[in-house]
Amino acid sequence: MKPRNLLLLPLVAIVAGIGATEPSVAASPPSSYAHGLDVSAYEGAINWSRVAGAGISFAIARVSDGTTHPDAYFQRNWSGMKAAGVVRGVYQFFRPAEDAVAQADLLINKVSFEPGDLPPFCDVEVSGGVSASRLGSQIALWCNEIKAKTGLTPLIYTTRGFWSTDMGMTRTFPGVGLWIANWGVSSPRLPSSGWSDWVFWQWSDKASVPGVSTADSDVFHGTVADLKAYAASHGTVMPGGSSSSGSSSGGSGSTGSSSSGSSHPVLRQGDTGPDVVTLQQSLVRDGYNPGTIDGAFGPKTLAAVEAFQQAHGLVVDGIVGPLTWGAL
Image (cartoon, rainbow, N blue to C red):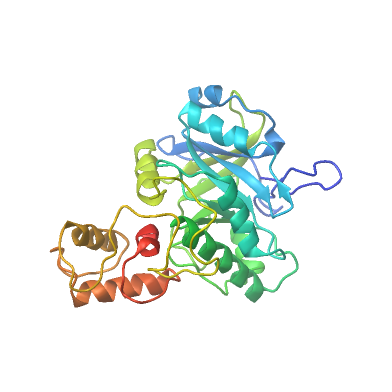
């Protein structure tokens, strides 16, 4: 990713993935990891069949640079990835000085999420002149809008240097995964606070892959099978794709109306059955203890749900509605 040049490339975001002191060449990640690319209009037309044939398992395409520079190649890339069988994701170059909710809504309006797609990514690597506190608040607004209107929990792309300096490590986003940029190293260095592990790693800006000009190289922290399982469990729960209407733009509660829909019923204390078992298993997977997995929504399950909602910026009411299911 590279920051746009307003004089030469008005629609292109060329994002500086890491600090100038770090090299952009050298070490490769383990071959067992699922390998991918991130792309924008900067790469021009891409032959996704050739990309897939070269062993690329996933790709993450830019939808826009803020609200004023939509990516002219996004829809072509989005449909091309699907046709080629490439697991697809979408990122937005985040402009902290712009309206965060409007940026999230632009992404939501332009993307039709389907089963097997990755959740969206917020590309955070410029401060736009705002304070660390304001930057954190803007990111939170963006994440909450994505959650509220899609039921998906996004990921954040950033670098250790930016997060430590511009964010000042003043804010964490529990439950939001990390896409770390760190080039030319055998293992990425994480920000000193906020995350204990990474989900995706942008390891080079010099991919050499048939079907595409030089792009950024990424890996998923697992095998191709792990990647597909991750997409299945963290991707869309919405049978009709994303929607631009429904719950309030600022809402992040668990039970408010959500246009995303859900394949699970609303659950509360006192409920029993297989859906409660699914809930309890999901809580355990995410590190919350609901007590015995017995299909009974009792006090321990209630406490685990409330802790989960608190950590994910949802309304803490202990009721598992579409947004809580989406975050799970």
